[in-house]
Amino acid sequence: MRLKGKTAIVTGGGRGIGKEIAIRFAEEGADVVVADIDTIGAKETASEIEKKGVRIIPLEIDISQSDQVNRMIETTVKEFGKVDILVNNAVYIKKMPFLEFSEDEWNRIMNVCLNGYFLCSQMAAREMIKQGRGRIINIATLAAAIAHAGLSAYAVAKAGVIAMTKLIGIELHKYNINVNAIAPGPIETPLMKKVMERFSGEKKMPGMGVIGKPQDVAHVALFLASDDSAYIYGNVLSVGGGFIGEGIMPEK
Ligand SMILES: NC(=O)c1ccc[n+]([C@@H]2O[C@H](COP(=O)([O-])OP(=O)(O)OC[C@H]3O[C@@H](n4cnc5c(N)ncnc54)[C@H](O)[C@@H]3O)[C@@H](O)[C@H]2O)c1
Image 1 (cartoon, protein in one colour):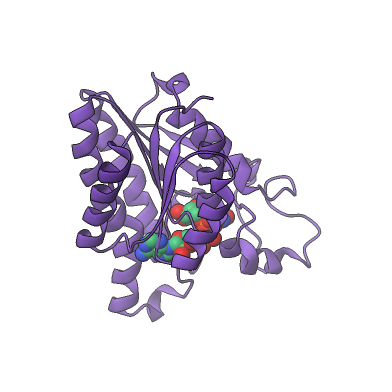
Image 2 (cartoon, protein in one colour; image 1 turned 135 degrees about the vertical axis):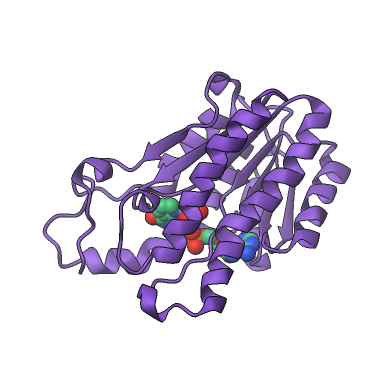
C-alpha cells in the first residue's frame, strides 16, 4: 500500500485517464476526491472505488471557476483533514483550424487546460505547505512538443502547463512539495476515440503501432505520488511508447 493514509484529489476523474488514476490510488490505500464537471461520471468512478475500502467523495467541480476550486479544497480538508496529492487531469479540447478559432473557444480551452491547473495547484499548495509535504502531478501531453494541426489552443495551454510544472517545481520544493508532469502520447480514452477512428485505415499507427491504456499513465502517476519519486521535481515524464521517436501522427 504505497499511498496508505494519504488523500488525493483527481480532477477530471469521471472517466478516461483520471478515472484510472483515481482507482489506482485507491488500490494503494489513498482516500480520493473525484472532481469532475460531469457529476454522473464522478459518481460512477466513486462507486467503483467504494469497493476498495477507502473513503471517496465525488464532487461536481468546474476547475476553471475559482469559487468551485476553493470549494473542492475546503471539502477535502473538511472531510479528509488534508490534501496530500493533487492530480491536475481535467481537459476541455476543441480541434479546429487556427484561423477559425473564436476568442471564446480559445479562452475556454485556456481557462480549463491552463488557468484551471493554476487555480487548483495554488489552492492545493497552500494546504500542502501547512502540513509540510505534498505532490502535484500535472497531466500534460506530447502534443505540446509535437505539432498536430488543429490542436493549437490545446497545445499552447499544455505547453504552459509544462512551463508551470518546471517553475513551480522549483519554487515549491522548499516546502517539500514535488511538482511533476506526465506527457502522454495517444491513450485509449473517450477523448481519443475519435482520433483513433482516423487510424483505422492506417497500416501503421504511431508509437510502433501501440495505443496506450489509461493504466499506463496511472502507474506513472502512482510513482510520482509515492515516496519513490522523492528526488524528482519540476520534471516531465513522457508516457508515449515510441511516439516521440516516430514523431508525426497520420493525418487520416
Ligand atoms: N487520451 C489521450 O490520448 C491523451 C493524450 C495526451 C494527454 N492527455 C491528457 O490526459 C488527460 C485526461 O485525458 P482523457 O483522454 O482521459 O480525457 P477525457 O475527455 O476522457 O476525460 C476528461 C475528463 O475531464 C472532465 N472535465 C472536462 N472539463 C472539466 C472542467 N472544466 N472541470 C472539471 N472536469 C472537467 C470531463 O468531464 C472528463 O471526465 C487530459 O489532461 C489530456 O490532455 C490525454
